[in-house]
Length: 332
Image 1: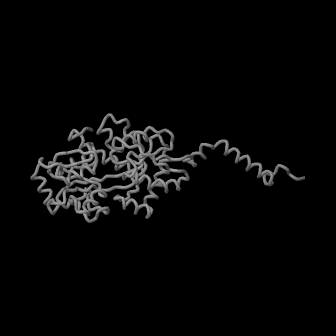
Image 2: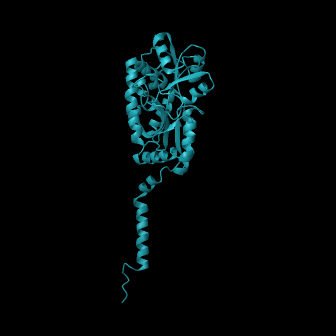
Image 3: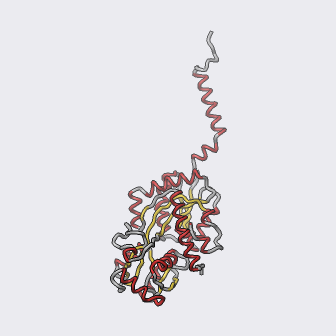
C-alpha cells in the first residue's frame, strides 16, 4: 500500500514551500520593508544657495547615490543663518527619508555660538559621513612682504592697527583667525562683511590686511596676481594647494584648522539606514571620477563613516568652543 502521507512526495514538498512563503509574507513584512529602504525619493537638504560649494558637493553626490539606492535623491536648498535653517529642518525630520549636506559649524558649535539655535547638533543630528576637507588660506594683498615669516613679523609689529576681514561673526574665518592670533602673537581687529567677495574687495582697497579664505576662492585671486597666499591652515602642506606652505613653515606652532563638509541625518533615523548611507557615500567619494571632481572644487576627499565623523565633531567642537568662550563671541 502506498503511503500518501510520506514527506518526500512532490505534492507534499510543494505544499510545505507554499505555506512557508505565505508565512514569511505574513510574519516578516517589516524585515522586507527594512531591507528595501529607501522606498521613495530621498531628500538632501543644503543650507546654502545654488552654486555654492555645499550645493555643488550635494549635487555631485546625488546622482551616484540615487543609482546606488534605486531611488531619486532630490537636493533642496534652504539657505539662511549660515546653514542652520537647513540643519534644523534635517534635525526635525521624521519621515526617515531626509538627510543634509552640512558644513563644520552646523555640526559643531551652532548651539554654543548662539544658544537660541533651534536644534542641538550634538543631540539632534546623527553623523553619517565626512565627505571632504580643505585648509583655509591666509591671504593678503599682493604687495605685502615677500615671505610668510616677514609678514607675520610685520603683523606683530602692527598690533591692532591692522584689520582682518571675514564673511561674518562666528564663521570659520572669524574663529580661525582668533585662534591664529592666540597662536602667533598677532592682533588684527575683526571687520565682518556680508561675504568673502566683499572681503576680497576690502583687501584690494586697503581696508583690511588679511583674511582666511577657502582655497578655491583664494587661489583664483592669487593666480590672477591680486592676492598673495602666506600659508595654509593645515598641519602640513595640503594636496589641494601643494604650492602654498603651511603656516608652521612661517613659525606658527600648534595651529591647525580645516573646513569640511559632511552628510548628517536626523538622530531618529534607524542605525541600519545610517550605516547603509555611510557605506555607499564612502564608496562613491573614493571613486576616481568623483574624487577628481571634488578635488577640482578645492577639496580633498575624506570618506569616513559615522565614527570618524563623530571624532572630528568632538575635536572641532572642543577647539572652537574654547575660542568662542575666550573671546566672548556672539552672533551679531
